[in-house]
Image (cartoon, rainbow, N blue to C red; front, side):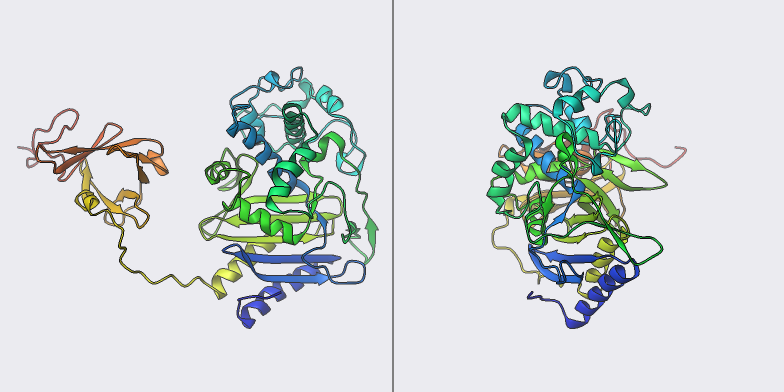
Length: 455
């Protein structure tokens, strides 16, 4: 595969992959790095059917399947067929989960049990959707706070049936029609299609393997049944990064990457959005999903800020460390850091915005307003201090709407003197003035004027 990385960087990455495969005794392991939508490095270690795996070798991707189900639900939401606040009972009545919302189930905070009743579902033939729904009784709820993160495979089995009921076809048929074909993902399938890897468990104390079953999970298939290739997962990583084609609006995908629940350990490191797992690592905010089924491990992690992704796939039940993906991203950042594009003045800046720029004060706190290269306004604390910061887009009527941060969705209005000179900003009732507590601006409570202490 053609790569743009230096030979020294390729060696560092290959060694990391080789150590993982060799020391953890993984039958086969492939991994790759994507930057700006293109694979810049791909590596393969071990063998499948006495040959090296390629970008077209299928592996089972486990819970990465959930990201596809999440997209199908969000398509229904964007079409107005459902609302994330809707209760499950409105669509699938009769379960003990009926008073939970679709959004709660999608973001792993419904309180539903992690696994379905009965035998270990990942290694046995699955039942029907009706059987799954009937099993969701009071015993399937866990006594944790409703808002707390609790990972549930069962929840995504239910969401798959929700999609099927509203579309009038099996969830995987809907996925094929609405996601896979439009994105050209022809090697992502419900059952394996050659060339594909066989799943193995590796004996902990001897160099022998045991073939793992690959049963049809039935109603639980939406939680983790799909098979795919590295090539298709590159396209999926591009989708998660915002290259969505006609499948979903990029703003909806960005919404899916927003934390809906967090795994609240000593520090907030991992969480869940709307169908996407989330991970924080060395200042990165990653979105994607890991996958695990008997005989297989896989991960797809994307970094929207850097427009980068890492993918790995293996045919082993256990052994690949969770750090492999982030280690590869770290190596890319260390050995092949991005070179910033040269700055040049822009010819299309709205010169009328210059009068808004510079220092503004909220009470005594200095803030700085800048015009960004894309025409947005950026407001943040001045003098290098950290605190509330937001970008704003124009509404066409002289007002601006916050895009992110504390002021997301809030309206910024520009107050002006009689001659039109801006003299204050009204940001959802917070008044920013050119000098601290300017007396000629409508500061709530009035301004009596500055004076020495004790006077």
